[in-house]
Length: 131
Image (cartoon, rainbow, N blue to C red; front, side, top):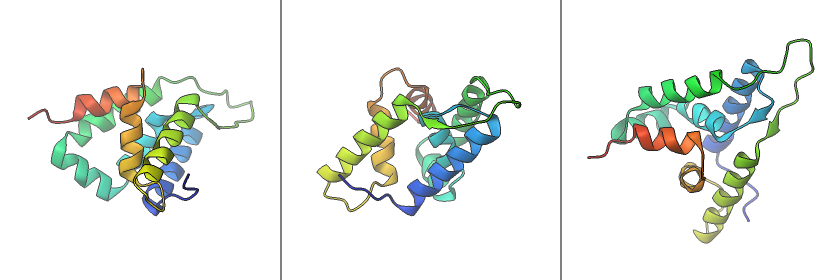
């Protein structure tokens, strides 16, 4: 399994962590990661060519804003959610199958589409152009 990831994936993960920290969410989720990718100009531009990025951003942040928050007086420790762990396992397996040297953005998106009961998947599907 690749132990590395591309700069875009790392950047999105850092952004996702920042969002979870700002919102005081206990768990980092695939939805946070999608929000992180939306801050990447290349991802935004690519998604605009096949979907509605502004709608995706609105839906994802609407979801994130409803997540439970750790009270200010408590120390915040952010862990990967079980879905995010599953998603990274699937992305890693996809990268290995493709003989890639690192997990790339398309491996992550593929892995999100493999998740069951995921709002990240639901909002990505909803925001894609069907024509």
